[in-house]
Image 1: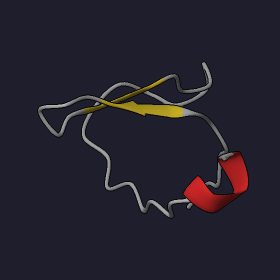
Image 2: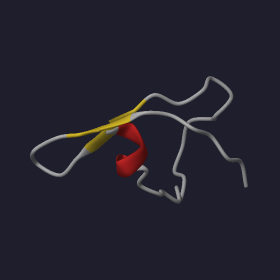
Image 3: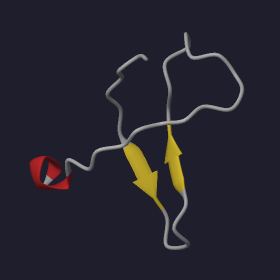
Image 4: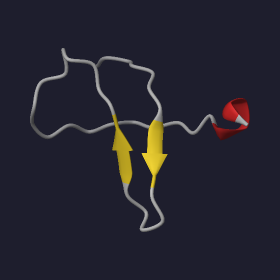
Amino acid sequence: MKSIQTIATVTGDDKITLQLPPDIPPGEHQPLMRDAFDKLH
């Protein structure tokens, strides 16, 4: 398992977009997400 930190954008239709580092290969992944909303605002 690899840990990364990035910023994600959540849209009004409950979809998420994020930028991954170039060393993450294409394909299906099982991300584990933790919301740090209180740290951003």
